[in-house]
Each structure stands twice: as structure tokens, then as C-alpha cells.
Image (cartoon, rainbow, N blue to C red; front, top):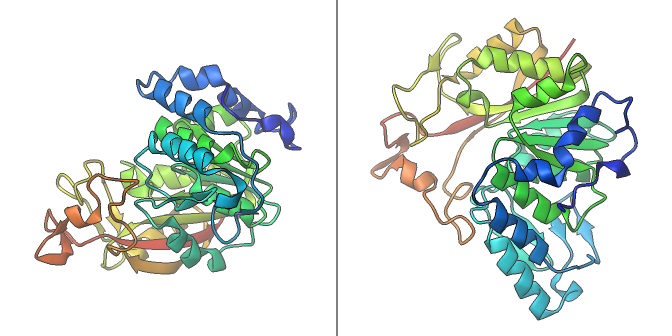
Length: 326
């Protein structure tokens, strides 16, 4: 069985609007995802050693245990299991002295935004496009009552399970499903979350306005949206629509200017939408590592001009927006 246990958390009971999410916690449901790699990931999880961390830090990092909490043989056993789950894209993680140097320095993004958002203490949070749950763990470290991630990739949910195994009481979950399926599960009571994060998702949506409205539907009145997306320079009303690929990605639809994104948020009924961070993605923040051995940002940029992608478009620049549901 996969180590998922919703039952430990108060509020996740039959009377809660989040109760429909419980069906995603069953091991047989994971196995039904029809992914040919599932058996090897499942076996890797089962091969992980039983270890008890002497220390846990989710506030400043995702650091669970240290090398002194296990024998060298156990540490190697753990490393082999975690390597089965390569590629690791979001992180970094440190488990009992095994340092997972992920493609993205997701901690840098977290550091850029965390001072600009409402305190997460006691809040119920949804992270759309959560990947392996790195930011969900950081939300738990910041005091979240519950952080629920949703991502379409089963591989990321299995990586999440590997980390969660050693912090079973952390109020964090990643569901391998679509955002639309989660909305269907919430039914007529979607307003379940105090904060909703959508980071690195908007530009993959053919209808960004519909995505913003769906995110709004998940928020309680007074709740906060934290939106991170690729943007381009330009006036209000301008958005780049790539002819084909953007930075080698085939499913990129709209890259708005900051003023355009603020206008979209206003049109969707959010109040006080604002830009809190703009950052050009560097080759130090996204890169190939031993834990992600495939193409990364450097392979997506013009080798003679890193201000342009290989398609001749502006290189990746990302902005974080914060807005409130009335």
C-alpha cells in the first residue's frame, strides 16, 4: 500500500467539502492510472528503508533526517530507490543525507514570493500544477493546516510519496489528476481553500481566462490567489502567442505582459491584483543535474544570444501576481 493517510487530519471527514478527495488516496486508484512505469516506482517505494528522522525542517528547506540517522547501507538503499524516480524537477530535497539536486531551484522561487503573500498559518491551500509537492512541503513548514497539490503526472505523485513516507504527519498531499477532475470532485462546494497557488500553469492553458475563473471558484470569499507565469515585456493588452513551440515546449499558448495579466485578473473579478516579483530565469535556477539528466534551460536558448529562445522569442521571464477574491 502507498503511505497515504488522510484520516490523521481533523476536518477531513464526511461533512467536509474536501471529503471527495479521499477517493484519490487509495493505492488501487494509483494503480489504475495505466502508467507502465508505475510498478517500478511502487517497488522503489517499497524498497525504501524504514527510518526515523532525528530532525525535520520544512520551514527553511525540505530537509528530513541526517546521515547520522541511518547506516551507510541504509543510505545507499535509499539513494537507489530515489534514483529509480529520476528525473526530479522540483526541489531540492535532503533525505537522511541524500541530497536531491533537482532541475529547478524551487527554493529560490519560494524565497521570492513568500514575503508578499498572506501568512499561511492555519490556512487550507490548493497548489495547481504542484509537481512533486516541493512547495506544498514548504507551505506546511509555514504553518498551513492542509496543502493539497494536484498534478497530471503520476511520476511526480510517486516522488511526493517517497518524501512523504518520512513525514507522514505533514498535512500535505499530491493528487495525480487534472485540475478539472478535482473541481468535479468538489462538486457544488468548490470554495474550499483560503489560498490557491497556480505556478507555471497559466501559459499551458488554451483559455487563460477560464483558468483564472476556475481558480477563483476554489477560493473562499476573501481568499488569496498566488499566480506565477511566464510573461513578456509589452503594454496592456499585449500577449505573445507562439506560432509553434516556445523554449522547446509545444503546449504554450499565451504569454501576457504584466499589465495584461493584471487586466485579466480584474476582468475575472479579483480585487487588488498586483505584481510582486519579476525574474528572468537563470541558468543557475534551471539546469541539468545528476538527478535530472535531460535537456534543460540552456538547451532551449539561442547559444549565441541567451536573451532569446531557440525559436527566436524572448527568453523565459516569470512574474508572480497576488490577488484576492471579494
